[in-house]
Length: 218
Length: 218
Picture 1 (cartoon, rainbow over the protein chains, first blue to last red):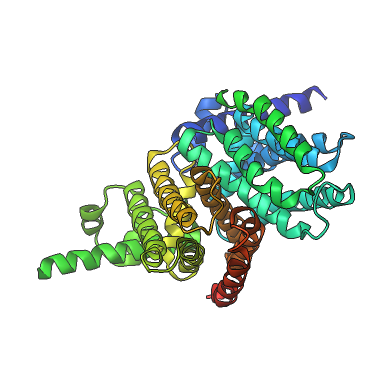
Picture 2 (tube, rainbow over the protein chains, first blue to last red; picture 1 turned 60 degrees about the horizontal axis):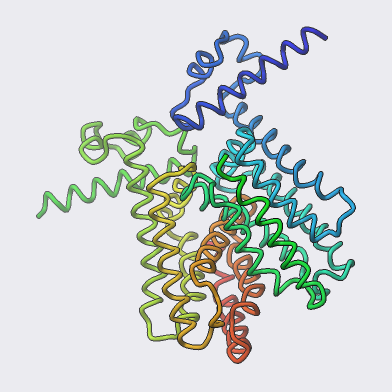
């Protein structure tokens, strides 16, 4: 038990050091030797947990995306209407990117995987699946227009949020991501929300936007 | 003159080899030595043109994005209404990604730059600028609703297209990018286009979609 806790602490230290170095000098320029030195441990200790830089990157992607999906889903499990949970959940996930370095690093490593990659396809697929289920619920609840193609909308939403994060990272280190997100929803709400629910969701978005836009500078 | 042409041919061969290797084994795993070997040239010849892998990557980003912007803008200079040129131009730029390996590689290297990067900010900024100008024209022409915030819409559009490309690359090596693009426009047109112009642009999109969706497998 003690041994297991110590092993987990070592693994954590490796991941923290790797995230720090990937962020400071880039994934490409970081060697396993740099990570060993920064984490102040032996080569053996690192290789016990990770056999390559790629397997370390995969662990960061796994953990980071699990944190993001957990943030999104823990909102989703509340008893609020589905569309509220989606809007709120995306803000919360995006906020997490500014405070959780593993989540942020994991997402950037995921984006860098590029071409037809099963790891990336699986992670993006999980987001699209979650989003699509929520949208379907929101139709049943009368908040979204019944003729919407939920799968298409789910894919477009995940794509748009992903692109907004890429833009915001490059242009402001993520500081304006909530503002960009608000503008995306302002644009989308009138097409996807039913006429009866639209005034409510405009007000809901305005409140969410106010609550989250201040948190991005951290 | 002959010397200059030969120098340009060498530079071209280096870029072609680098794009090939970045695509096959990844940017990270590719060494300058691999590129020298693949391009069948001397170390001196490579260093004459590029002093590091990063400067080679920057050259690919520059050239790739210039090709994409050129494809988008050459449509934009035609005499068609601005919104037609935007819709068509995005399809053409996205098509180019499936045939122009430098453009594709450049975009993926750009995305991998990650955190607050002046090169990335400049390239994305150029796209947002071009898009915003086109949208403003489309308002003047009566095709877009006059109360739209063109800058916000331009940023959201560039973000969404970028995200769609990331998703499509990861999930289908880009094969479904035009279909995803069509779904994005189908969703957006009803909110941004004036009531008078909407039927026309729905038909225009359907034709564009048919023309471009077959070309992605190449």
